[in-house]
Image (cartoon, rainbow, N blue to C red; front, side, top):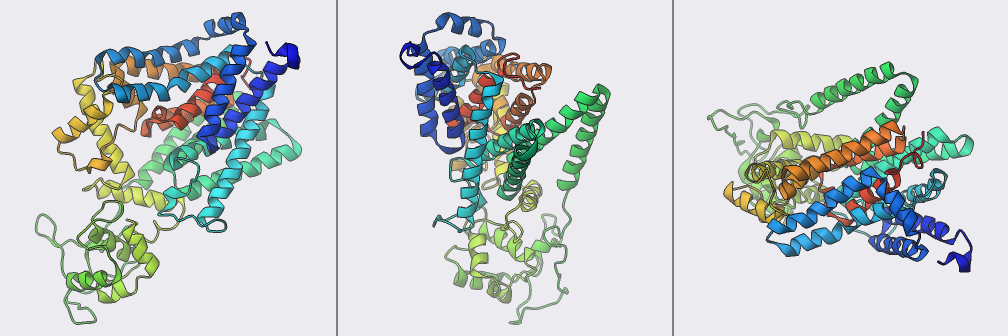
Amino acid sequence: MLNRFFGTNFHTSFHLFGISAFAVGLPTSKVILSLASILLLLNVLLEGNFKSYWQNIRSNRLLHILSAFWLLHLVALLWTNDFTFAFNDIRVKVTLVLLPLILVAKPIEQKQLILPFSLFIGSLLVTSLYNFASYNHWIGHHQYDDIRGLSLFGSHIRYGILISMGAGICIYYFHHFKGLLKFLFFLVFLWFSYYTYYSQIISGVVALTIAVLSYLLFLMFSHSKKLGYISVFLVIAVVAGILMVFFSNPSANSLNTDYTILAKNARTASGHAYTPLYNADGSINTQAIFVNVCEPELNKEWSKRSAYNIDSLDDRKQAIRFTILRYMTSKNLNKDSVGVSKLSEQDIRNIEKGIGSIEESESGLISRIDGIRFQLYHNENPNGHSLLQRLAFWKAGTEIIKKHWLLGVGTGDVQTAFNAEYERSHSKLLPENRLRAHNSYLTSWISFGILGFVLFLFMNISFLVQQINERNLVGIMFILIAMSTFLIEDTLETQMGVSFFAFFFGIFALRKTNSPS
């Protein structure tokens, strides 16, 4: 329609502008995402090439599967009770079907993707540098409780996923380009990798690993299928070995292998005896965190240093007494008046925030893994521990599925079903931590029954198979990253998560046109 006024390529150019704006909005702003979506929709409506749109939509099998999954949300209204939640969920997921519909109806060519992808990488580069500089107080005056506040542009987990996706695109362009551009994309990839390590986002590390392994396996299969299959086996073996080493049962002194355990009859500098702590069977607990403890001195000195009562909870809803013991052990301090006096003001603040060791207070992936290992083997209280809380969510989710495996609970009753299950099982989770599944596969089954789960799984596997057949490296990276996030997040229940999935799904749902090889 507007081509007659602005030239024959106006709608195509404006379409590319809208896609590029959406790519910029993914790591920066929900407002930009909303505006870009409106512009894209208005552009195709004003162009009015509906016959071509329909032919493209009718011939796209992946879009049909995605649309069927979205329509399940409407069908499941028939057996839901909480329509407020249901309609909000449908509103959030309009983008899930609308954006791919637009991108499939009016596809862009492979050579045009360099613009939105470069802007996506550029936006990630600028925002990650800003996050890093602000967190280290080089710029601004933002106050942080812990590393999870590193991302100033949305959820730290979803931002970490975007960083990993950006790193994957950098790998592709590193492989594709030569000269200066090759070098620049490699530098950006290195920065994204370091940022992922620094931010301690485990899902981001997993996503980045998937991107790198996808590229390496892509090269192996390109050379030889036999070599590719051998590489897959080796990757699985190595990953399994690493997991076994990292998450093996820590030793008694795992928090500090050099911790000095005093003699049995030792006394504090004030002459008080150390208090032995006992196991359930009556034996003395000899783990490092439970020795060299003088409870009277610890209680008295802590009350002088902190406004947090020693019998209360820290900011992560953990028993702060236990956090004190862990932290002082990590610093090789006796848990007495002298030990507490040696804690700095920053140490006190770390303990109040729920940080259990000096290593955990430092930025970096290893400290995060140490924290997870400790969670696994000290799992009495799940509150404040992301992994333990997820395990509690998944346990509740599986119980709900057992009762509603056929049709699910409906679009709007997911949280209601979880609340009921938490009450029934007398969950240790505090009310504010009693959340939904944080697993998209479980959520699809809980919401829509066995059909919803199968359709959701079929949609993702079909997309993966098409990308493999098309030898589309970036498409393979995307869907594997998305499927990994579905294991630990309800990715499709937030605007940013839906936007991420819908954008790349829509771009790569096309055959051949957008298949880099």
